[in-house]
Each structure stands twice: as structure tokens, then as C-alpha cells.
Length: 253
Image (cartoon, rainbow, N blue to C red):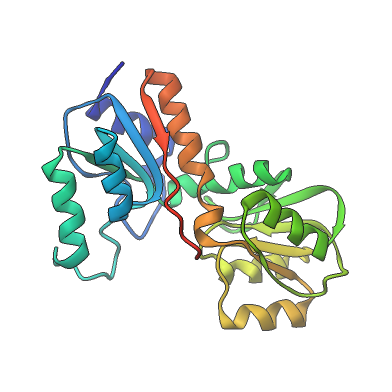
């Protein structure tokens, strides 16, 4: 089956409520390809490796979390950006990217899907002052030691988690925000949660975790943001009877 590119983009923009969310990049259609879409390839980042895989699979569109044209980056199309865009245009492949709108969606978003994958119950927003809180508060079915919870995350995501804090502390309620959201550990501290889970870690994160007692779990930027694109692609596949394939381009970060 197939769908018009314009209809596909409109459906996604509405579903993810793109207009209501301020972001660091354009969300939706970033590179226009063929007007009709039969097959979509999904991935976390629109890297050259993902583009090459999409070309080899005769995809009409690529759906990602990390696309192009970020605020503050050099706007000149040269180097790897030129090669990536040239590859897309040469093969008439559209690039659709959804950043924060995909993080925050309550059902298909990265946060919601990671919580589901880890067996955690979503309790509410992490940022009580924000209309569209990027982070969420989640709860374990039963308390686990920080060490046991860290091992659980590692087992589910297939990568070793970096854990900072008291390994014996019981973890029941924690904050969660995928990607590079380590700075939001302050929200978990304010809410007096047991821990905080994100993708990356920075130098101050260690000290905050050790000095506040809020255990920090860095599970990988890439590893924590695979589930949203998977869920979104499966949604489109079911709705429009399209072929969808998620390709996990390995990234240790």
C-alpha cells in the first residue's frame, strides 16, 4: 500500500502536536523526496549509514528522532551534511524528523516507551511548571536496590549502564527523560525522588547524585531513544499498510 507524502506528514504533525512544542530544530518534513510513500525506514539518527541502508532497501522515506538543521549549527551545507542531503535527493528519499514532540508523546514517545520497556508505571510529569514536560515520573512495581535496578536496565537495553550513587539504596520512584537530559536531575531532587534515569552524563551529574542521594542512571543517549521511532513507524505501518523497517545503527554513546 502507499500514502501521499503530504498526508503522511500532516498526520504525524497532528498526532505529535508539533505546533504546540518549541524545539531546537524543525519537526516534520526536513527533506522532500517522492510524493508517494510505499516504504519507510526508521532509525534514531539520520546518519550516512542509515541513509545508505534506506537506499539499499528502496525506501521512499526515512523517519528519525535526530534530523538536521539544529539551531546554532553552521547553516552551510558542506562536508557530511552535503553528502547526506545529496544522497537523499539523488534517491528521492524524504527525511522526516521529530525531536521533542516524539519525546513527550504519552503513548508513542521515547519516554513512555522506555518506561514500558523497563516495566515502569508512568505517574506524571517531571517538570510541574511546564505544559509539555519533557521528563516523566515513573514507579517500579516493587522497590529494588539501585544496583539491581541498574542491572535490570543494562539487561533490557543491552548495554552497561553508568550508575552513580548508593548502590544499596532502594529505588521505587524516579524521574526519567531519554537522551541528553542529565541536567533535569535537579527536577528529581526537587521532587525528592529516589533516582533519575537519562541517556548521557556530565561532570556535575556525579556530584549532584552523590550529594543529594538521588541515584543517577546513564543508560545511553542512543539506547534510550530507539523505542519512539519504532512505535511511530509501527503506528504508520498499521494505519496506512506501509512497509516499515527499523534499523539500529550501533552507537555506544
